[in-house]
Amino acid sequence: MSPLTFAGDHLWQSTVFAALAALVAMALRHHRAQVRYWVWMAAALKFLVPFAALAAIGGEVSWRTIDVIPYENPVVLIEAVSEPFSQSELTVRRPSRQTGGTSLFSLVGTALVPVWMLGSTGFLLLWLVRWSRVHRTRRRAVLMQDGREVHMLARVARGQGLRPLPLYATDTSLEPGVFGIVRPVLLWPRDIGLHLTDEQIDAILAHELCHLRRHDNLAAALHMVVQTVFWFHPLVWWIGARLVDERERACDEEVIRLGSEPEVYAESILKTCKFYVESPLVCVSGVTGSDLKKRIEQIMTNDAAPMLPFWRKALLASAGVVAFATPVVFGALNPPPQTRSVPAPASLPAFEEISIRLNPAPGRGGRGGQMQPTRFQSMNLTLKTVIKMAYATPGAQPNAALNLLDQQVAGGPDWLDVDKFDIVATTPAGTQPTPPDQTRRMLQRMLAERFTLTAHWETRELPVYALVKARPDGSLGPGLTPTSAEACEKAKPVQPGQPPAPGALPPCGALMFGPGVLRALGIPMEWFAQTLTTTPVVTGIDRPVLDRTGLQGNYGFEMKFSPAGGSGTPDPARPELVTALQEQLGLRLDSIRAPMEVLVIDRAEKPEAN
Image (cartoon, rainbow, N blue to C red; front, top):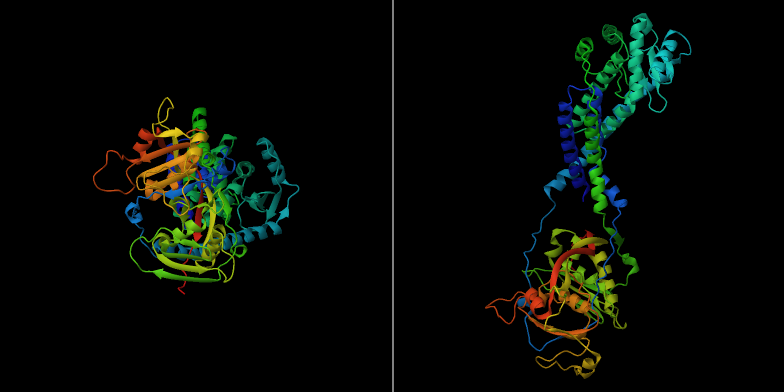
């Protein structure tokens, strides 16, 4: 997932979450402000917690493990029967993807990144300037160790079950407020006692201690981070206003509940607003925030909001836990793919000379290149086809390999499977013939150097076929029989350079294929299952086939079926492959998902012709 896509997903998810929070807050409008405050705080924190990050955490602690299922080329001699067939007629064609340049979405996203960085930097500097102003006031303030306000603060703190926080006298016009998060202090105007009575000072102190007990400074600082990162989102600023409004209302309700007279408390707020100014920082909790007129009306009416019933509290808390826990559970149930890197280009052998030219011929191109002893040559091949050859899975038999399937190559530009190239690469003159596995490593280096190819392996769950017994009683079809050692001894081997006779069985331990026919003698079922994939022009199967028959030993068979991509009048003696498997061999293919290694293309560029 690109960073731009990740950011877009996070924004719409957070927006929807905030909209749901607004509906919940509206439903709770007749309840205490503290409940609505935490609803809005959850909406703010959602902007800092992407669901994708929670899913990644779940994936790291997942109890699920994925074991890679090895899928290698069978150790089997494959011979073509004497019946000729045209490969082009049997190729299953798929619609080609259209090439495309850089999308407008990507261009706009790239252009917006500097604008976002400029805005975030501007707001960060703004908060720092405002914080420095309050910090200078704190440094110039004098610690009050005795006096009227100090004793009153100690008494009010004991009443709320808190330890008295340090009280610092200031000579500025800044309102009383709690400054700091780790070591908070109460900034107190030195001359405020000249304007307020003892009862009014008690009410102001009780209000500030409510902010301290609720950790409002920390919550406000977190939302300032949200505003700095998502400054462009109007919903973020609206949530910030709701947070200030609800936190002040929550403190007002608590001060009245602790015994302050509404008239005294309202007058203390009005006098504070008359003589002092509000803090420039929302994370310095004062007394004059929110809609002052509305606050005074609510204080004077003294309509005690009902307590939220326990079952509603439990329901609300459960909804919040579920909202944040669901991505974690999803990530645990869907762990991220296991990854491993491809070999570094410098560690691989290299061709001596390489010629690459773009082939303008129409169509989808060829199917494979030629790995000759001293050179590699391909004509009219897409880069994806070359990649599937270069990163083929090594088989158990020396020099045997299984080219990657289409589903085992992911990512990359659109032209990867559209543009075709003619490639000729030669090894140094006079060297020994190059084994196929070394040629593949040389191809990997060529792709990295000439096509700027970078990639990595991932283990993903992909659709595969499981070859299983088709009949409930486990019996086999008439065409599938065990091959004994005596039968193998009687089988006549094919002479080198001599094609097998029409209709003849292959030698023991080998499999022959042609259009609509598979013949084998003395091979294990695992070889047969894998051969169904290695011969797609014959079978039409484009995904791995795993042996799940449970059959041990070696078997022989002759299966006739309708060729892949065939046309014309159907032959009753040659049914579809899946039907032939069931009727002739007593087997079937079940579609399942299993872990497979996938080569993910991170980058590729078109080379210059030479």
